[in-house]
Length: 449
Image (cartoon, rainbow, N blue to C red):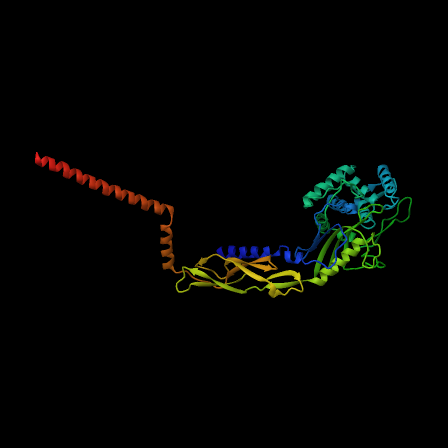
């Protein structure tokens, strides 16, 4: 049992090494993204690679539709059996919104009275970012109440840990009451990607929504430039989890994207991207694609997973007690340690700081946890690994008995009993002296009489 607990503790300490590497997080790219907020993380190690105003409040824009899709996937067991209807109030809202934004609005081509199953509406939301389809989903999942559905969106955001997010609508059209952060949107996107069926929604560039009574075929095409073969941003290694651009607004182009290459996986949340590319061309509509591509390229070119500590590495010895003829115990690392660090940094740059007690007592089993070693890079602790005994050591029974006796003398009750006995002895001696003195005094008086 003792050996099992020691092994478990060593494993726990080793797992603690997977905390984000501050040294890597401060290794910044040579360019400054135009985004209002950026949060970039390596999903293999959960290591933060880059941040820029990651906790600053921004409007979510169409990224709010991501939560709409999440609730539909979580709340409706069979999406193909549930139907949404385009109601009059929805069409009126879309008309008023389009006027307010100068006549430009992402829609799914749905009109009053149209009924479409939720599984198809999800593609309308995820591919062209159809605001009318988002309303239809909210109305259906929210039992006929969009405000109630928005409450569900906000409650789910809090449950997921997106504590600085508040949605005002299921479609995300400009609203001063809506707010989120680059960090929060990364949390929401990571959860969306864990849901069954979500990967299909982000892997197609076009979808046939089927016939309606008034139209033979309703097609939805993606706004995801990474999937469009004719786009300058086409890149099969990058998955656009969700993109947002609202014409006529000042929200800019926002995106959460995922990239996989050479065994590495990165997630980028870039909010409110604007401006021009390196050639000075206006890229307001695709700024998030441009910035995400640059950040992914920088990460893949810069970071590598390196082994910074080998399992079984020997460390300095520690003082040993209760062992006859042996005064020191050999130590070694409980496990290896790997981390994502800039490729330019050599593994030899890592420093070790041992955290050990002043001594250990026999008996000791081989592999028993003794302490830990901190791995330090650029004055930052990047991980911790357990330090264990490199050998088994038996205890001396004579020394153990002596130690037990000595330890007994250091207890409160032992000291109390010693003091009590001492007091009793003093009292006894005092009473004896007093009794003898009394006898001599009165005994001498009687003889004189």
